[in-house]
Image 1 (cartoon, one colour):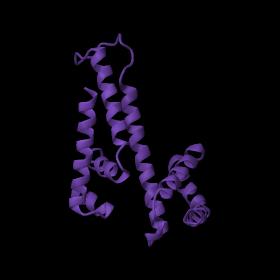
Image 2: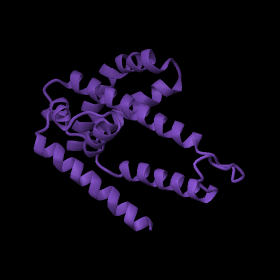
Image 3: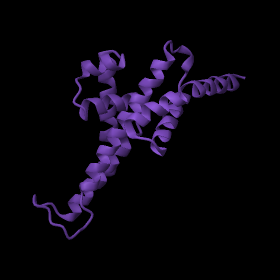
Image 4: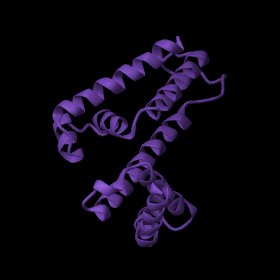
Length: 170
């Protein structure tokens, strides 16, 4: 019975917010399949949450949409960095790195990115804002409406997870 209620609520949410979300994404990424994919990403994130306790559902939906865009930008940045790492073993790096070292670094970077995506979204968001965007923990606390202690715990959790993955890779 609860699943039917949740499904009906989700269908209503999709009917009400699909087109505004699509326009939101199209203004930022252009028309096409990517905007549709981003809308689907928003709804898949919403489906994993208990929406009954949220007072301002429209604001919440668009906050998730903004987070989806940030995640997309981060992934694009990582892809851009990864694309700059040469695959050709005949290239000699000016800094004296061997092709094997470059490949190992590239694999380590990919492993760390994969490890980040194993973390819960809130932990990953705190870590990303702090390390990639240079946002102070106090500001992250304010933006995400979390206590400073929670932000610090999220950072500790992310760091511990990444260190564990790094140790396991050796």
